[in-house]
Amino acid sequence: MWQKSMDLVTECYQLAHRLPPNEQYGLASQMRRAAVSNPANISEGFGRWHSKEFVHVLLIANGSLKELETHLLIGKRLGFFSSPELTKPTALVEEIGRMLTALRKRLEHKA
Image 1: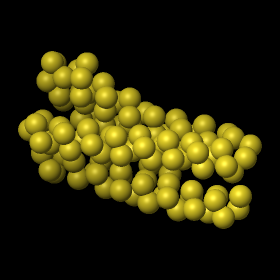
Image 2 (image 1 turned 90 degrees about the horizontal axis):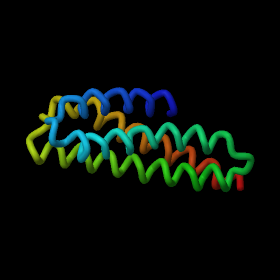
Image 3 (image 1 turned 180 degrees about the horizontal axis):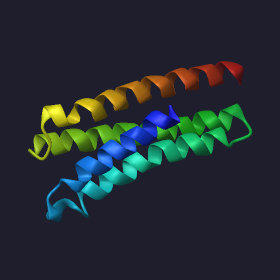
């Protein structure tokens, strides 16, 4: 899951780089921040001692993932991204979301 999140960061940075200059401090910055937040939160949670803390950080990671998904959709609506350009990042968002949910449920059953 962490590796896929890192792959998503790479995809999003490449997309953000192609945004117009007037979006570099707007949408591009928001996309990069949300993308980086996801694997950072997963690794932070992994370093926690208690399952309950890990679950909390996974919820934050999921929130960042949903935020990123929204940024991608905004970029598409504004005509910055085409559907084919979003195929891989969207698939990664969905897959990571499923993985976060599955891990969270397993950890909640352990707690």
